[in-house]
Structures are given as C-alpha cells and as structure tokens.
Length: 398
Ligand SMILES: *Cc1c(COP(=O)(O)O)cnc(C)c1O
Ligand SMILES: [Zn+2]
Image (cartoon, rainbow, N blue to C red; front, side, top):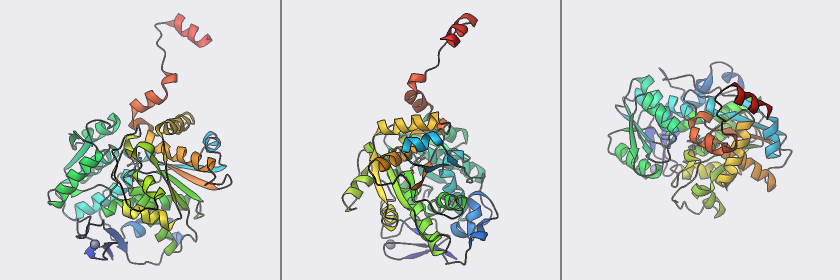
C-alpha cells in the first residue's frame, strides 16, 4: 500500500486523494511500503513503468505514451568541454513530448484519471503545458494550461495548442501562474498537475533509476541537472534514498543543482546555509528555469543535504556557450538543459568535481523546443541565400 505523507507534521492521507499539500502547508510525499526488491525486478517492462514497484505499485490502466528509456550518451568533445574523462548525458529530450515532464505526467495523469478528476491544470514555462496537453488528450480528459505571455518558447506553446489544451497566456510570469492554479486547485475547481503533485515526483525518480540501471547499478560520483521549480531535485534525492534503502546501490552520488544566475534563489539559499528561501524576480534566456519562487524548495533542500550535494548558478553567457557545445556535438538541447554542462564545467574548474570523477549531466529538453534560441545562439552560422548555380558554386569554393 502507498500513502501520501506530510514530511512536516507526519499526517497521512489516502493515496486516492487528489490533494498535493497538507493542511499544515507542506507538500505531500508519496510513501510506499518497504518492499523486497532486487535488481532483477527491473529487467522486465520498459520506460517509466519498468520501475512500477518504486513508482506506483498499485497502478492499473496507466495513461502512457511510451515515456522514458532515454539514452545515456557519451560525447568526446563535451567531455573535453567539461574537462572530465567520464561524463555522459541522459537525454530527456527523447521523451514523447520532448522533455522529462512526460515521466511525471504518465504517473500523475494516470492517478488523476483513477481518482475521477474532471479538469486537469498546470502553470508552466512551456514543457509542463506541452506534456500535460498530450497526456490529458490520451486520457480523454480536458485540461487548461497557463503559460507566461512573454518568455514561453513557441515550440512548447504550439504543442499545447496542437494537443487541444485550453491554453491561457498569462500577463505575468510563471510564479504568478503557479499562484493562480494553486488557488484554483485549493478551491476544488481543477486537479493540479505541476510537480507540486506528489505523483509527478514519483515518475521523475525514474531518471535516476535509469541512470543507475544503465550503469549496471554502479552510481556515478555526480549527477548534474538544471534546477527551476526544483521538482527534479526533490525527485532525484528521493530516488537515491529509496534505491539505497532497497539495497539496489550502496553509495549515493552527489547531486549538483544548476540554476541560471538571473533565477537563482535556491543557489543563494545554499550559500546562506539554507536559512530560508528568498523569492526573486526571475530573468534568463533559459526560459524553462525562469522561476523565482520554486515550490519544491523544502524537499529539494533535503535532497541536497542527504547527498552532500551542491547548488550553483551560471550566467546566460555560460549557458549559451554550453549550448553551443552541446548542439555542435550533435546532441542538441534547449537552453535550460545546457545549464547542466555549464555547471559541470564550472565545478571542475573550481575543483569541486575532480577530473577523474564520473558524472552524468541531465539534458532536460529537446533542441527543437526553442527555435528562437537556436537562431540566437548560433547567429554566426546564419544560412546564406543564393539565387542560382553560379552563386552556389562561388559559395562552395570560398
Ligand atoms: C521543467 C524543466 C526544468 C526545470 O526542472 P524543475 O524540476 O522544475 O527544477 C529544466 N529544464 C527543462 C527543459 C524543463 O522543462
Ligand atoms: Zn503537515
């Protein structure tokens, strides 16, 4: 049996509840019965649901679009960029809607459908909207998504529209949208599908489970990832804790959460010894992490503390340089994703990650999500127009 548990006051709710927060205000966690698990349990099945026993053991009739099973890629030029020999990339852009959000959405939408939810909703910088739109459509449930009118990449917005979501452009930022949908959820008008929803976290744990399994359950020294609303940071720490409790691994990688300098309240709190979260007005070209008041702050702090992790901020120039490297190496990813490589490179430079260490960077979203960013970051490689054979041959010989 699984239950929803408040990490603050210990209150317990039925797993069938659509509540995401406790009466005391803390976000709820899913807690599963301690099960006898061994590595062979995960040799059958595929994707997120391969890890059903650690995600939602009671799941039935799941809404799935074949999410997960993303590749762990090695790249010589990117290992050189970071200054590491053993660096690989978990490419979450290879999910059905092009971001890791699908992993959480298959679990949370399945749960919402089972609980009889009538209207699904999220605030989003774009990828959550695209993902919820697809999974709600697959579940034959209506959904409404709120995205900032400015700073939402067109690739993501067009996905939400294409999949039939009622798409609301908010004259405000992500944080304002988050407040609005939380209020609507608290009034019982919608079911919240943001990563405040504990089942989203359960699905996103499988990024870590896949990394561990693909490495033969030999944990890397570091897992480095971009951090915005801090759902992944919460999920990764929970996944590692549970993998160790189940006896699947015997040591924990250190987590490195990388924020954009213009949206770095978590990094600032880390520098102050996690005294408190001080929300900021967020601004960065990495729009997927353009978040000033992350909702999963408390559980993300637990993840960083439990793994002896670090939190850092990299500026937009460093993100653009890392994106240039990721794209020209053939992998390709949207700007926020590339904060992970920028962060890894910085941690090697400052000596936090030793050159001989093993590291996995998570690339969170697909290259095509943000076409404007591609043209801006690669402006030096702008296409050349020709009108005929003469001009083409002149170009080819120059
Ligand atoms: C949602 C998202 C993030 C941020 O993840 P959090 O779990 O909110 O910290 C980073 N990159 C991409 C591409 C995303 O879509
Ligand atoms: Zn509580």
